[in-house]
Length: 255
Length: 358
Image (cartoon, chains in turn green, purple):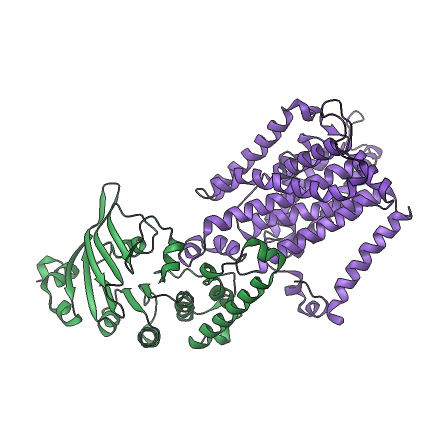
């Protein structure tokens, strides 16, 4: 059974068909890329998978269960974490608190536990603390645990966002343009980091990315989207040689 | 031991205050101002939960205080005083000290329910639009109460002094001062526990990036409802306390001007800072009381130097010019408030060695 199954997914915004007949299966332990020109509908796909939009048509099944009607935080609790094209960290909270907060979905204690500081509360908070420290350690972020993300360099903010997504202990990680806004040295670092994450954690990754260097060196399989439709699918080599993909990126006359 | 210095000092100060009052060594005016201070601390810090920590602009906080004040008063009058409309006292006066905390709790609970009036729209709306809804909620609550004749309508409601007298008959100690102190400390402890917990940090997460919060597994709907209801509940407790301190309650005392007072305190103290709100509530209460003397003095002075026409007098109404003016000046020159997103312990880190709050 595939980890993520998307069947006949369509999304309309008023008169705009943002996505049409999107069919896709992502297996466990797979690294898939999603590319396409600007406005092709890539982020729309991620917004649908993470429950941010309710699809006009079609179905998304994660681990066999439909996610239709689930609020984004419920989808996250199923094991889908995501990062954003424009970094969305909580800027006035320490890096440590950012990581702690990502464990919100499994806290389980009630408001009463918080106010009365019951044993369940203190045990849970201790576990949250231990796991957060562990993530910071693994992601080499210990040194900036007390900093506010807004005071960190951009590359480090990306790393914090990745750490926060991993703190959810996801089975599927959605990366929305992780290399956006990074310089070439940072991009090399990012490729190494993401490759390491993929090998270290037992997760599948689905990544939107414009920088071909990143996509081609990381992804095992690539999906190409243009005007809301899949126009090609295959290994990096196949995609690089596909005339339709070249056409979509460079314009029809170029082929 | 050093870690408890501040805690012990606080307890001693409160005990000293109670003792002074008990021995009638404290002027009743000073006592009222002190109790008002406590009520303002609850009012301001609870509003800070919504306006500061969650970043929504609630300008109808007075409404929830009003619900608490009326529910507390009505319960108090029904239970312990004979009233033409509400009937004879239901309970023997000996029960008053035991029932009073329950009355406070019930007031908080009722106010929390009315908090839904704002919490539910907040799930769909944000910012300016929600601010307008909070004003509407404030007016709805006041009009509702003013039009129920059983509880006095626009004339207001009194008779709560009976409950206090009943408590005093059981044991002759300054009950209201004690309840205000207990209420203030409880409110602050609960608020602090809430905002320092991982679950409570969902509140500033909604403020700083709601989309990220929802995507990272924070149930933002639940966070908003919790914050609004909790904040309203504490305002309700403050209302019930104030109704009993003054022995009289009138819906118009909780209109938009009351809510503005709350805003002034929150913005003076600083967003998302409990110690800031406490500080601001103390300063603000003293300031308002100072105006009580300053305005007539100013009036006398201006008349003496013939700057004001003889038939024009500076009245206490000028308070309502000066307080909003304070808000304007604050927004102009220090929009982050005295503390602004920091606690006293962030400003003076060495303070941390002297207290243990959990």
